[in-house]
Amino acid sequence: MAIAVAERETGTSSICSFLRNVDPGFRTLGTPDSRRTLKPVSFPANGHRYAHGMRLAQFYVMRVRSKALVLALHLFLTGTVVAWGEPSAHGHGGGLVASGQTPGFVGTYFSGSATCSPCHDGLADNRGNDISIVRNWSGSTMANSTRDPYWRAKVASELHRNPQISDELNNKCSRCHAPMANESLRKDGESIEILSPGFLDPNNPYFQHAIDGVSCTLCHQIADDGNLGSLEATSGEFTTEFQSSSRDRPAYGQYLDPFAQPMRMFVGFTPQFGSHTGTSELCASCHDLKTAFVDAEGNLASTTLESEFPEQMVYSEWAHSAYRVGGTKERSCQSCHMPKVRGLVPIASHHMARARPDFARHRFVGANTMMLSILDENRDELGVTSQELAKQVARTRRFLTKRSAALKVLSAEVVEGSLTVRLRVRNRSGHKLPTGYPSRRVYIHFVVHDGGGNVVFESGKLNSDGSIVGVSLDSDSTRYEPHYDLIERTDQVQVYEPIMADTDGGVTHTLARAAFYVKDNRLLPAGFDKLAAPPDIQVAGAAAQDPNFRGRGDIVTYLVDVGEAESLTVSAGLNYQALSYGHLQDLFLDASLPEVARFRSQFQNASIRIETLARVATVVRRVASPVGKTESNP
Image (cartoon, rainbow, N blue to C red; front, top):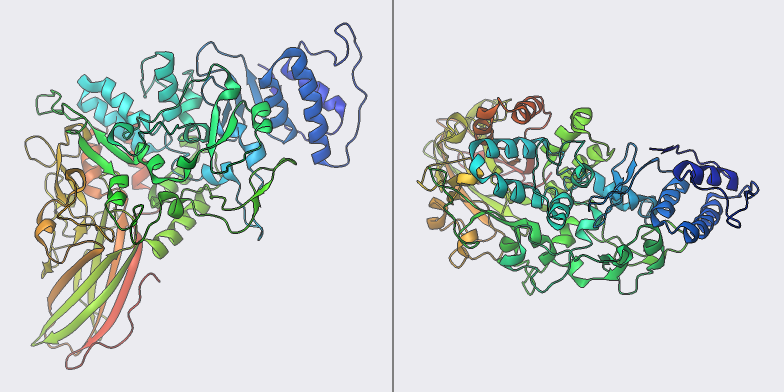
C-alpha cells in the first residue's frame, strides 16, 4: 500500500510524484514509449493548481482508464490525506481512507463521506457561517451511528439473550445503524454479522462501510420506488438500485438542474433531481421501525409485519399530527432537522459550482446531547474523528430549549393551608415527546419553596447517578411509574415515557421480547387525536382515559400541604433523559459482555444526565392571586 502525504505542494512535478506514488506504473503523459515528464510549473493560486492538476489527471485517466485515480488526485489536490488500497472483487471495494477523517472508501455500491468532503466542505453562507456538508454531518448521531456505545451494548445484550434469532437481530439492528454495510452484504449475498468478527471488526472488509454510519451515498441513493412512507418501505426496507456502470449511480438531490459532470468524473455518481429527498417519507425509511419478538420460550411470536412491535414510529406520529402534509401546521422532518439557509449559497467548493437557493443544512440536530457528549469524551476508545461534537451539543441544547416544549402555570392558589397548582405542558414538536427508541423519557421536576427558601415539596428530584427520586422504575426495573392527573405526594412523579411489555404482560427492557406498550403517555403533538390513532401509535395506560391529556400536551394538578406559609415560590422544569436509569440497570445485568461493560463505565462517567426543555416559576401568596412572572424556555 502506498501512502500519499497531504502536503499542498505546487507544481506539476509534485503532481507527477503523487501519481507515481499511487500508481508505480505511471511514467509519462506523452507517447507510450516516452520517458519525458512535464516541467515543474508554479501556480499563482490553489484554484489554478487544482484546475491544472485535474486536467492533468483527466488526461492520465484517459490513458489508464482509472476513475479511482482521478478521485485520489482530487483528494490530494484539496489537501486530504489518502491511503490507497487494492480494489476488491466484492461490493465493499478497496478504497481510500482519509487519515483522521471519516472513511473515504470507494466501493461498488457506495463511497465514503471523505470522498464527498473535498467539494462539499469549505462552504459558507452570505454571513460567513459554516455550511460545510460533511463537516456539519460529522457531528451528528447519524454520522456516529455505529460508534454509538449504547447501540453496541444493546446489540450485544439482545444477541446474548436471544441467540436463536441472531440472523433477525443482526439484520434489523444494522439496517439503519450501518445501512451501507448491511445493503452491501445483501447485494453481495453475504451473511450479516455486527460484532466481531462481523463488520465492526476493523479487519472486516465491510468495516469502512459500517463505521461511516448513515452516510452521504446511502441517503442520496434511496430511490422513490412508489413505496416511500408505506409499511413495506419502513423498518429500513428502502431501495437502492444496482447500476452496471458506477457512473450511473444516482445522487438524488433537491435541485432540478444539477451539473453532473464533476461528480461523474471525480466520484462516479450522477446527481439527479429527486423531489422525495425533501419529504418526510424519505425519513420514514428508518424512523418508522417495527421489530419481531419472541415468547417466553424463545419462539418467534410475531408472524407478520403488521403484528411486529412498533419500536419507534416517528413518521407515523407526524402523519397523525397537524404538521402532516395538508395539516394546519404543515412542516416536513427536514424543515426542523435540516433547516434551509437564507439566500443563494454555493453547494460545492470547486470553481464550476453555482450558488443555489433554499440549501438545507446537514447538521441533523436532534435531542441526544448525552450520547454526543459520551462520544466526545471517549474519542480514542470509540474511534471518533469529528471535531464538531461539542458544537453539536450546543446546537442541540439551543434547539431543544427553543423548539421542543413549553410550561405554563394556569392557576395557583392557597386555600386553608393547601396549595393547588394547575400546570400545563405543551409539546411544540411534530411528533411525540420524547420520540424514537423506548429508552427515553421526559419528566416534571416540581418544587415549592417557602418565603425563607426552604423546600416545602419536591417531586422529580434527580440523583447524581441519573435516577429520579420516587420513580418506581429506577428502584425496580420490573415496575414503572403510572400516569398521573393529580399529584399529592413527593414519591409521585409525572414521567412521560413508553414502557414495553412482553407476551406475558410483564415489563421488559429486552427489545426482542417487547410485544406491546403497557404505558405510552408521551406528550402528543398538536392535532393528534388519541381516540382515532392507529394501534402502532395509540396512547397506552391511564393517559388514554385522562381528559386533560390530549393533542399538544397535558395538564397536571399538584395538591400540596403548605401549612401556615404566607408566601410560596412554585417552580417547575420539564427535563429530558435519552436513557432512563431503570432501563439501563436492566442492560447492565449483562455487564459480563465487554460491550456492555465498556458502555456502563462511559455512562457512569458521563457529564450530561438531563436536558431541561422548559422552565416556569410563579409566586403565590395566601390571600392574593398569583403574582410574579411566568417564563418558558429561558
